Length: 418
Image (tube, rainbow, N blue to C red; front, side, top):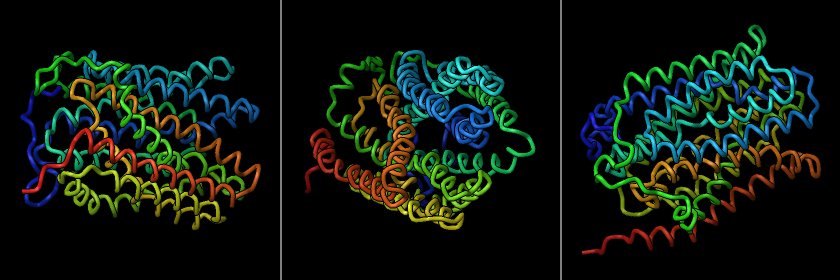
């Protein structure tokens, strides 16, 4: 896709992921990702905004489900568009659409208008993820470098989300949540400008290195058993990860804790990300450079996420919730890098955007399932059932990695020992 820089080779001797040799397009996508996540107040504070409109609990839950439905559709659509019209055009279009839609969401009061604005906001919310995933795979032929860049990409996402939670918690009172949503819209417009200025136009119909036509289609992708197993395992692991942003606020509200207290849990999460990411990123890069797929690491991350977020069911104070948020960080970092590694091994070069978009639906599914699962558990068994349910989902995600590993090895057999 990006023709302004030659493919990047293996990491340098320092093992830093060759960040000095990233092309400008990758730096732009990294900066833009952090920008829209760090100022991405809409999603984490949407429930509070809807409550301020004095809507019924049923209406609030329906609006949130509509956002999730838009997110799911947007993941597939943006992945398909990345292969068809190119990374640059896809991002500019979706970010400008977000800049125009979010102010409408901030000012809407009628339920039909809220549904329409929330659905559109969901479509464009995660638009950059499948585009960035495909761009990394197209730009860097070396698996170790891909893993390093993906790790830093998820570092930007995690720190940005934590910044949004922390800053939003402090600013929601004095500014109001509608003002925060306007700030989110401005960030999206700025991202569109950065993409327009720094990402070169390229031929979206052919792969930049192989010259092969991008001919991926949904029928072939949905017939890929390896992709299906990765989707199911990811849905389980990410349902646990999504508990940090969906179920945890519910549990904290049950304990009488406020949005400001929730913001402190995000600060703890951000601190752990800042501390652990540089160490884990180098290690993950070395693991990805090896011949074995990262199914074992994916399984371990699913268990870590299930255990840490399950432990939130036993917390009752801000300190306790903050500790579980920090303990989830190793699982958060590893699960996204391992999933990207497996996705790269499974997806053909001509359909990387499509595969990335389909995989992105697991994130949307997770943010719908996590609060629904927590709500059911709280209603039928309280905090302890919520803990047991989350841990069980994490174990299921790990178990699915066993048949997934067999399929990945069959598609990419290990080199024979000499």
